[in-house]
Amino acid sequence: MSSDTVPSKRPEKTTGLHVGDPAPGVKKVDPILVADHVKRTFGGLTAVDVEHVEIPRNAITALIGPNGAGKTTFFNLLTGFDRPDTGTWEFDGRPLAHVPAYRVARMGLIRTFQLTKSLGLLTVMDNMKLGAKGQSGENFFRALLPFLWSGEEKANEEKALDLLTRFKLDAKKDDYAASLSGGQRKLLEMARALMSDPTLVMLDEPMAGVNPALTQSLLDHILDLKAQGMTVLFVEHDMHMVRHIADWVIVMAEGRVVAEGDPHEVMQNPAVIDAYLGSHHDSDLGETETEHVTAMKELIDDEQ
Image (tube, rainbow, N blue to C red):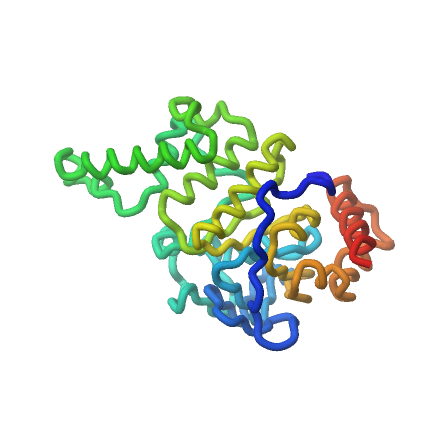
């Protein structure tokens, strides 16, 4: 997303999210997700070592950091797709440690992936219906008695069509998901997540690989999630997007939370500047990482 691209719907920023000075692990007024001493190692590498973090309710929180900071691994741990070596975490007051991913989803915590997980050989509509929870027809014996679940199936189709219309995918409902563009698959994954009426939506790099023509649409949909009463936690490298739509920013580096705060203020935090710039002075960067560091430099200059 270019620096002059902003959401078409200017977001109302949520204020009063934290108690005390913003710092790693700062207490939130009304946290929906709380994690303590979550650590994950792979051999001799410590990928995640988060002492304490809280995610504020009914707000958009961005989780940022350079490549290899542990952001996606942390997502995987919180949502049951991976298990930590140590740690506890709870969602809406309910512990999530050792809870499998499908049960986490049923509790109202839904995530998307950097690489979309749509089922290419199913239609867009069928992908949507897979996202609905508590379907009676999924039971083997009930499946043999359509009169028990046909009404529910119709209601799910109506809900799916309404969501597809909102995401401008209704014309594609009978197409195979494999035929969609990368951006359309991102939209489908987000729409499918809403089929389960989640409380917290976690988006892993929602803008990665998205055609600029669909970027604006994705931004507006993320803002709509908050407007509908949901909490959003997203991983993103586009710092301009983070500054425009996030209410709160958490910064990770080398597996740890090194800073938290308002998106405008956190960009000037010395720990953040060092995380993005300090570790790269003597190393060769790939093209993508170079873009992230350049964007960070531009934002720091803008804030100053």
